[in-house]
Image (tube, rainbow, N blue to C red; front, side, top):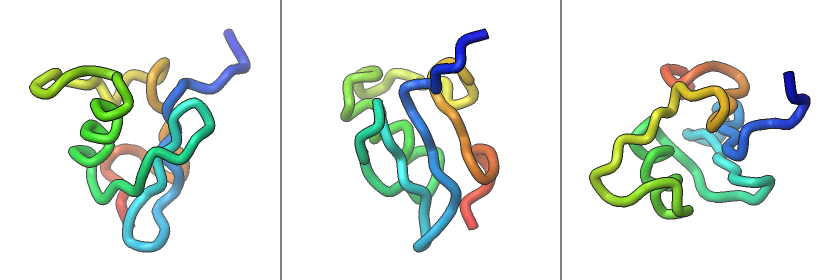
Amino acid sequence: MSSEHPPVIVHPPADGGRRVSVHGRFAGLAHGRGDVAELLRGMGFGTEGDTIDLFDSSLVEWRGGGPETWR
């Protein structure tokens, strides 16, 4: 098993949302799963209309709670 993190980190809830970083750089603040998907599309992880698997642990690491935790 690799010790490297996935390219996308969704940080614990704070300030009304969750910070999202991609490859160690701040990508934006998400207020729900749809926001995370839009941020990732904007960073080249798909195009409009593509389904992004936010449950894929090789792509996204959820810290401080999973995709259902926003407060």
